[in-house]
Length: 330
Image 1 (tube, helix red, strand yellow):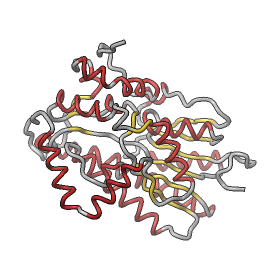
Image 2 (tube, helix red, strand yellow):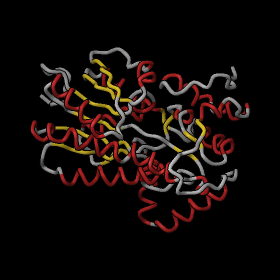
Image 3 (cartoon, rainbow, N blue to C red):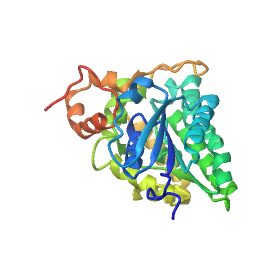
C-alpha cells in the first residue's frame, strides 16, 4: 500500500506549520478529511484555539510553537515522532506579509519576513529530515508564492523571503534525489483566504490597504483557497518538484524566464502606478512599524469593503482576524 493511504493499519502523519488560519488551516482541514493525523503548529495560542479543523476520519492535534525558533520546532518534531512513531509529510505554510513602498521598509521588516518564511522552513525541514530518511520516505512542502518568482511591487520583504524559500526547496529536492524523500516548492497564485486582514501595512496605509484588499478578494484575480489547498496537497504527496495551484503562475514563470528585464520593467511601471506615498523611514531601524489590515478595515471606504465581500467571507471561514466595527454591508 502507498505510505500515504489512510487505509493502512497506521494512519499517515503530517505536520503543518502555520495552520491556525488561512491556507495552512485549510491544508490541515483537508488532510484531516483524508484520514491523516495532523499535528498543527502556530505561534499564537488564542488563534490556534479558535481554529476549526473540521470532522473526518483523521484528527488534528495542536502545538504552540514559533517557526523562527529552531529549538521550539525541533521539540515539536521530537514529540510527534515519540507519539506517532512515523512522520510522512511536513508542510511549511507559516507566513507574514508587509505591504508598503521601499521608503517605509526597515531592517525590522526584512528580518521579520526572513525569520518566518526562510528560517521557518529551514528549521522544519532540517528537523524532520533525519526521521524521513531513516524510514525511507517522506514529503516536504515549502509554501512560497508567485512573489517568490517575480518581485511584486510594494512587497519587498515578502518577496525577498519567498524567493529564498523557493531556492531552499529546489536545493533540498536536488540534494535528496533518490532517497525517497521529496521536497516541493509551492508557488501559488493569489488566494481568497481573507489574509488581507492579517497583512501589515507600513507605507501609504489606507491606499495600500484598498488595492491589496481588492487584489486578495476579487474572483477574477484570486483562486478559492479550498481549490488551491487540494492541488497543493495532491502535488506535495505526489512528490512533484513544483506546484503552482494556478496556470497563471506557469505563465508568469515562463514570461519572466524568457524576458526577465522586460518583466522587471513592467513591474516597475506597476509600482509607479500604485496610489499613495510612503513615509520615509531610517532603513537601519530594527523595529517593524505597521498597522494590521483588520484595523484599517474599520475605516476603509464602503466601496472597498463591499467589493471585498468574498475576501471577508473567506476570512470568517479561515479564522482570519475580525475587525470589530468594520463596515459589513449586507
